[in-house]
Image (cartoon, rainbow, N blue to C red; front, side, top):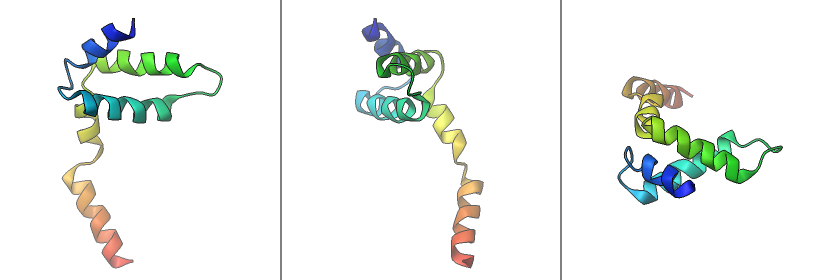
Length: 76
């Protein structure tokens, strides 16, 4: 059931609002038109249950990468 997936995902994300935001963004990115939206959401919550989505989000943008992007913007 989805409630089990949500409570499992809450072990990594303490704030329910933040969990909803992360799940909706991930569902939009991973959804395929040939599948049901509910199935994609369940897959995302299952993934969040097994791993920490916050750790993956913080690894995506490191301070070094952010500094390089700022330098590129100033040069342009």
